[in-house]
Length: 519
Image (cartoon, rainbow, N blue to C red; front, side, top):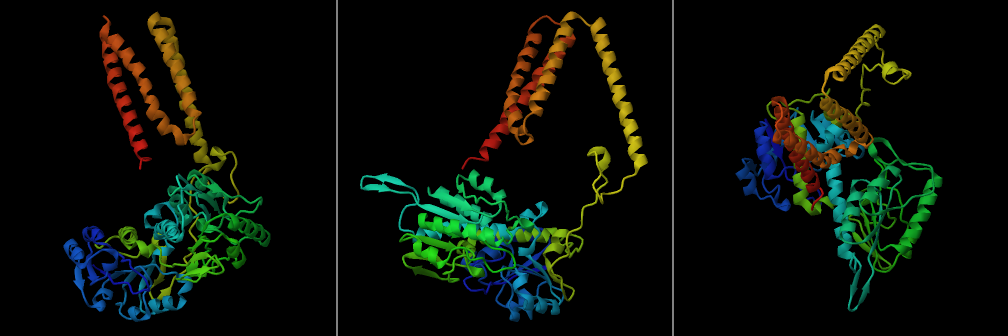
C-alpha cells in the first residue's frame, strides 16, 4: 500500500507530516512511502534524508495524491482534492466545524478523511493526540516569543548596578498550552499566576509552582471532553474585573482560552491593555479564532501605547522540526490503529477511527455518533448494596449460588485455621510458638500500616521499606551460624536468598523512580 506525503502549501507552514525517522517504522508496517520533493526542507528534513530512509521522492504532486493513503498537516485545497483517487484515505488536521464546503468536496470525491484533531480524548488514544502535542509546543513557544519582545530579565537579580525585579506573568487558560507556558515561565524565573474556569486545573498549576487565581464563585467551567464551557454573565463580569486588576500589575499575559466550535472569547479589552505598564507583552494563542485580546491582529505583532501584542498563528510551525517529529509519531500510531499497510482498513467499530472520521463512502460523517454506554455484568446489589436505576440485569440464581459457594469456602478456611492453631498450641515446641506469635503479629501490623497508606504511594513506600528485609537476612544468618536442625538451616538459607532479592529490587525500583524526576 502506498502512503503519500505532500509538501504543505499553507501560509507560513514549515512542518511536514512525516520525518525521515518515521519512514522505517512505516515500511515495517507494510507501507511504500512516496514523498514530494522539498516537503521537509523547512523542518530540517532534506530530501537526501528521506531517500536514505527508503522513501521514494517525486517532483510530481499528482503522484503523491494518487497514493492509497495521504498524510498531511493542514487541510487540502480544492485543487488538491481533485488529485485524490476514488477510495483514498486522507489523514490530516481538518477543523471540520470550519470547513463544511471542503468536507462536502472530499465526500463527493469518495475520500475517507480521518481528522487527527478530532481523535477522541480517551486513555487509549493519548498517543494519537496531536492537539495536545501541538498545544504543548505552542505554550512553550509563547513564552519564548514574549521573552524576545520583553525588555527585561524574567528572573529577578541583584547586580552591582541595582536590583532587577522579576517579571510577573499571567497565563489565562489551564489547558495543555497554558500549563506549558506556566512551566516555561517558571523555568525562566518569573512570578507566574494562572487562571482557568475549571477548578480541576488548580492542583496542576500549583504543582508547577505557580499561583492559581480563584474567583469566589460556585460556578465551574468543566465542559465535555476536558474543554471549558461558556460561563454565565455574572461569572464573566467577576472574571473581567479580576483580569482588569491583574493587567495593571503583571508584565506579560499569555491568553490560551478557546471554546471548541466558537470564536475566542474577548478577555482582555482595549482599556485593560492601556492600563498595562510600558514594555508589557501580550501573547494571544487564540489569535486564529479572533483572539482573547480585543486588539489582537491574527498573524501580526502590533504595539499599542507601549504594549506589544503578539498574534502569531503559527507557533508550532516556528519549531517545525520538533512539531513534525511529534506529529509524525501520532500519525504512525493512527496508521497502526488502522491495521498498518498489510491489513489497512477503516473499521467503523473502532471508537478511535470512527470518532476521528469526518467523511466516508461519499458522505460526511461528522460529527460522530455519541459513544456507546459500556455494558457490564456487575451485580450491583451484591457489590454496592443498591442497584442503580436502569442498571444491567443480573441472573439472581447465579448470584445466590456463587454466594453460597463463597460462604462454604470461607467457613472451611476458618475451620482449617482453627485446627492449625490447635495443633500448634498442643504439640509445637515452645520456641516455635514464640516465633510463630511474632510472625502473626508482624503480618497484622504490616497489613494495617500498608493498608492505611494511599494506594498511589504503595510503590515508593514498598520500594524503600524493602530495606526492612535486612532483619530477615539477620535472622536467616543467625540460624545458619548455630548448630540447628537441617530444616532450620534450609529455611534460613531460603530466607536469606529471597530477602536479598527483595532488598536489591526495592532499591532498584527506587532509583528508577527518582530518575524520572531528574533533569
